[in-house]
Length: 110
Image (tube, rainbow, N blue to C red):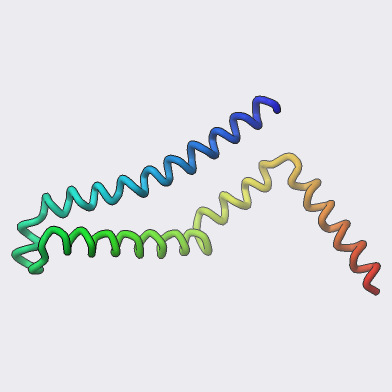
């Protein structure tokens, strides 16, 4: 295994791990903010701390899913994914091989 493959693998591990870690720490941030603004939520909305945390987590999860799906369909993720194909040296070869196989299958089907 060459050094580039090792670096790429560990970069992927880092990216996935930091993404999950960030996701989990957000719940701690929601909890801290709920306690910090406890008086506001109790006075104006009538919520206690547990209700605030529960509603905050639900709103957070729904917001993250909506933002992620919008990014997946229309945003930067699609551009990043397209760029990764352009930046991968064997991407053109892979696409050509798939097109060649597709042509051969179409010829056999005729």
